[in-house]
Length: 296
Ligand SMILES: O=C(O)CNC(=O)[C@H](CS)NC(=O)CCC(=O)C(=O)O
Image: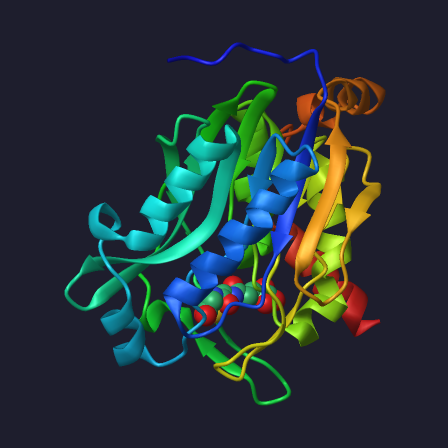
């Protein structure tokens, strides 16, 4: 079955904020309940955060707890949920097994029939040491993706990204140039970096690409000891935050209008004005002039 294009109609987006723990069955159960509530409130597209099924820092334990996607009980339950509620369900990511010692941080777009229509492996791995001593080595557990992915919703095209990808504007530009009106950014930002950068970066990506940004987040203190920023957020293409949550689990909703994308891009057509330069190497003459100037 195919879905009718509805690029001229608004739709309701719901973001599920979670505080996922160390037991996949419990986390999936929580997600399914919140998705049901979002449906009751009229959602057409529902997004869950990065690592919906598991927040686990221990590599061995993570590898024991996860399954290949074909036999993943969580994915099956979420597909059932999409079908039961007749919604577009975007599972922000699941940790899934892709080899004996290897996982992927993979998001799934599921249609109202319960079929997976797109999946995306997080490209940029969060291998970062923060000033407060927090240290992350995502690439120890996860195999990064190398493909940018877009998928079609009835209301327009959706570009897929995850969490740390937010810091790589070239990915978002590529998604916009591939026709995205909406960009999905499920996340599990740290509290510290979220406080410093979350709002400015989500708004910047929306503004510079004339896209909506839908970002369902993990928030609060997790069983594995991690603390995440929360603040699930919906930003419109003009950079206005139209819905936002705090740090508690819950649902964030907004009415989304595809016409706002066209409007923002016609007011400021910066997408059409890009890539008009080449980078020029410093010339020997310029270097000599500089040296002359310094010597004065
Ligand atoms: O590891 C897990 O359990 C779940 N995955 C995550 O939390 C991921 C990888 S560690 N987090 C981020 O990418 C944070 C990015 C971020 O905070 C920033 O860019 O500032």
